[in-house]
Length: 278
Length: 239
Image (tube, rainbow over all chains, first blue to last red; front, side, top):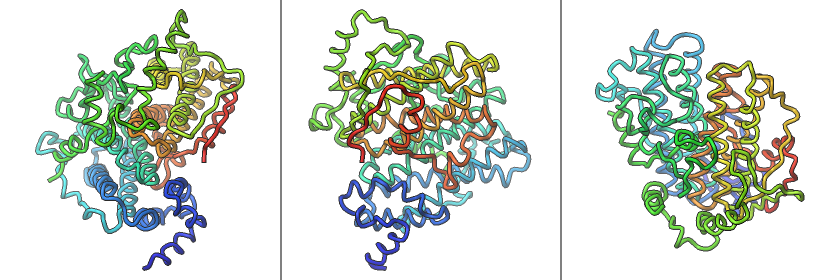
């Protein structure tokens, strides 16, 4: 397929493609809106053509790297939930809990499709359930037989996901359209995290929908030491050199910590994810 | 202070991140705030510092100039002012229909939004817009359902606003800061949605079939927020 054909194809969904192509910045500006004109089912495909063909000679290597990194995490999450829903009968109570986990599972599945579509041929090979060990080498041995363990691991994955997207957003600044999509996933992961936390609280865990200061002032507010790396640095009370604690009456250290979620580096996230990847 | 900058340099932003070497246009607003904070301190000397925003009111309205990152940050500051004002009013007389947990969590959220507002105010220094006057006539603060409905609208709007504004920022530091805030807003949104309808934390159409949250343009956000803001907001240099 030559470039003219590609542009014509894109023009069918975006009449202004030629204007968008130049200058580069404005080219990307309305990228998100374009999605509205594309049938939902065609979205991943359309995104893929846009990313790789319309808005640059090729997707920058760093952007590809970030998207594959995100894809790995989305596979991890998808297979984790999918196995819980499909292959662990009785684990998740029917009704609202099962409904919520299915909702989250479906979002992770959609994220996988979206990212694969965006990456096209640059995507990593698909990952199967058997590529993962959700017991993390036995640390969470009863993850698929003990609902509380399942939720604890779910929370760790979601909170890690939020930190992971946040940590690499700046690497996507050269591709504003991709950045926006990443941000749109990022806040959905945060919604998942808040809901899983609410589910755990309903079962007696001393946990809030937002990441607070742990008991005794530690960064990990879950009370589960095995997930300490997920919360490393979440006890930060300064933002951009400004001390948030006491910035106004009533803003305690806990409030300061809760008010801002912290990013995690690629290395830290991969170390966490690596515990669950065979 | 130095430690934090060092730490951020290493952990968050590998490229072009020093506030001292960045070109003027992209100079960190922290550095800008250094001068600004001093000026503000002079003006505000003697003012009581409490949780209400005590900055100057702006009779002619405020201007959000999107020509650079300060415009985007002021846009976020405006939204945080609105949210903080809403939750301060809620927390000052919580609806009797709230459970004890809801009362606690709405206090929490109040302080999160105050922290966001004060952070932007301090960080922007002299570049900060003035205080906005709000209009909450349409909200019945004695009714739990009215308060929850408004809270959901504010939180979902905030999430969409930050998601849509991310690409307008040119300075990596600010994008990271916006990211740190937006996920907390999304947690609020999910919590409040679940209170209104259990399991609706990420329901359609707020989250679409591709699993994507909304990303809204400043124009759409300000149009939606307009009914709650008395102060005129002028917008310039928004493509």
